[in-house]
Length: 448
Image (cartoon, rainbow, N blue to C red; front, side):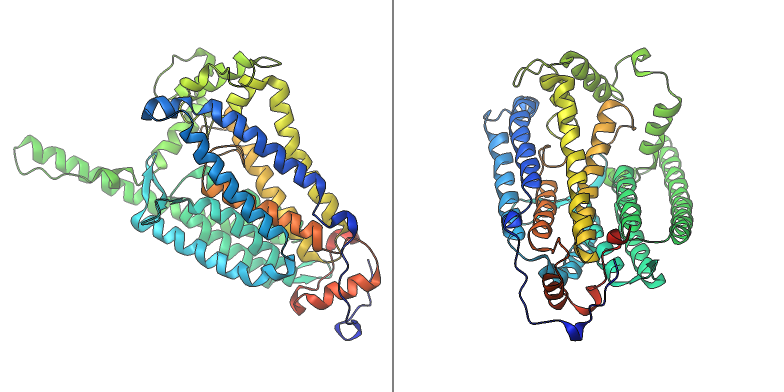
């Protein structure tokens, strides 16, 4: 799309939102509401293990979950009524908050499955998971950097460098919490760079830099692991001779996740097929997840009739997709998959119609973040990926995850509501006038 619009030729006009977009895209609204309904039904069924384990009232987990969904909806409602042009001052503030939360979790974080993954706000009791914040933050940052640094064919070196620096910083913290979140963050960042128009040659350089950084991290980690192993040997010898016992802090012993990842990857790639293994503490989650899926068959056993939710650990979060297939069958599993595919397809349609680069990158980035996380969750549940914890967006029980995904939906609805999606010169001029000067780049999709 060729454009002769300049800031000096912009008239003092107000963007008139088309009637069909007055309340945001109806397809995105429909997907959001559908996921909410599925979440309420399936989480109520899948929480039976949590209820029996804690001896609590049967409605308490689902009520807690519904409160989080309501909080997420309030955030979505407020954000979708806010013009996307007003988001720019908040991007840097949210990035700062994300960095502070990642530092905080390393200092006073709570151990979950052998790693510091969250911290609890004092006096409130609300748990914050920085990894979920990082996914949303990296999308907004890359959309901001690439939109501000567009050139004729691609993105400037400055824009690519800024993207790579923040991805490396975030991954350095997230890597300590889990390999899957690190891979997911990398996947989101590469997708965003491609969407933003970063040249393939520059992406190859970024991959090389990431590989060198990962190699350096593993080298340092191996040295630390050797020191820990030597310390254990010395302690064992001292105990045998009856000298004073030195106690290793259990938390420090759990800080390294390398052994866990190595065992999971080795078992996944070189171990025998799951069907040939005997059930034990290491493979019970996988076993019960497959049993649940097999039990569901084509049409499922019906909502509330799950058998495996009482035996499958984390059925309400990391393995909710297995319970969905058990209760709604293969058909229900395909429907859930189709909802996420429809989300990214609809986001692409809206992005291609946007006049400017920034709203197009925002809506596509949010859709990629949500859909890619859903694919990771489904892949883990069905055995395509090694075992790891990853919530199904907006369906799994959770706190920070629900809020971040709701914000992402709100941003998409805001773009669909306020971004100019036509070629009317008058409205395009008004949109450019309202954007900061460094975010007035044309949408690269429209030239394809």
